[in-house]
Image (cartoon, rainbow, N blue to C red; front, side, top):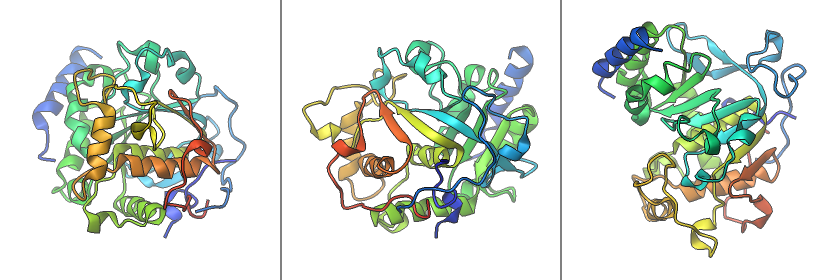
Length: 321
């Protein structure tokens, strides 16, 4: 049974980086809510089948995800998905082969695979990218863009950065990138869809994100997108909500590819304590745990299940699903 959030999240009620893009241009030509969901598509492809099915009828139209330039909606469906976090929890655990066995592999921002294949896998089907991470992706164009012609890139950002009237700096950069690399599959999360992501967070937590001045993480957008795309989601590298206050806690970097960067739990706890201008990562994980109680979501590295997590004040689950 396909996982959807309110029949897709859509049912609930950046100065332009020309220099970096020109480097890309140069690189291209020099190298390379608690009810189970109801499926709306045809018979799903067999495990391991091509992500982009030749039978287009089986690919649902996701209206909240719009192609740069031609504005066509995303058409995509995955029976099994590996959602790979950027956590240091993945280092040295040799989960790459298992990750790559999923039909679709979803990654975030500029998290690399090169040099980390044994732990995080080689394949990337979808990459969800925050407005604040676009320049880092462009800097790492060799492995993230030049060799990723089959990857779907989904970009999110506040409406003033994504507007299409020439004043949206991030959108302008994406439009230029599409002109430079026309074969890239570049989509943006629409402004209406962004509002519904906020509404979903409020429904699940009781917190009005805009009033409280909190930021949603790329992990939130990635999980919500995976709920649209996938029948089953296996999450790799996400700790349970109570992990950082437990005796099981181990010190690992927030990003597996930045070993000298901030420590994961220290960052989670410091952000959770702030009243504004922060990501409430732990609150988001409580929501994901609640969803996993009724939807096809499981967690690996570390292995955990939602039954082991204490109940929270957030009792809502994906509405309309």
